[in-house]
Length: 198
Image (spheres, rainbow, N blue to C red):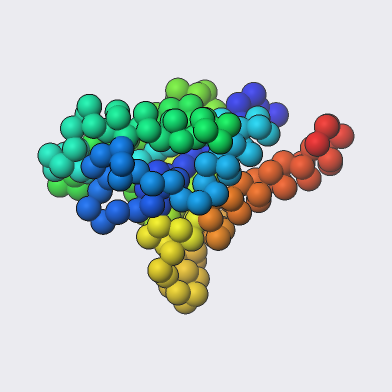
């Protein structure tokens, strides 16, 4: 057993509505129905939730650090209103042209999270809404999960099948609530088999 139960989530399209033009103010950060409650369910079952998000809008000059901090304060308040919390937000401020090692699909952010929490990333489920997220999870050694909200909301069955085939072990869930339900149901089975309390 390990001491810290940790889940990594993307932000845009998973916790809040995805915007093609980036979330540029707290008012533009709009929670996806049921997402805040899903985080609360994970928290109440002992899971720590950390966000890992690409924020190229910073590198493109569309949003500054003061504004992104205000956006995340608004996010924390929205979570708190549902009895939920996110432990930390890790973000990559770079554009693809910067060729950094922290922008998903590269695993840099997840490696940082693993070091910060002292966890084996093989034990960490990671949920996102793009093939890039699944690829990043796989590259970091995390367990890859796709939620069919945000950018994944518009993909058809054939495209979904192809996407999952590209990332061995990846699973798809209707939304963050369904992902949380999967994690908690598996927890319950594990606790039952090990003789622990469910």
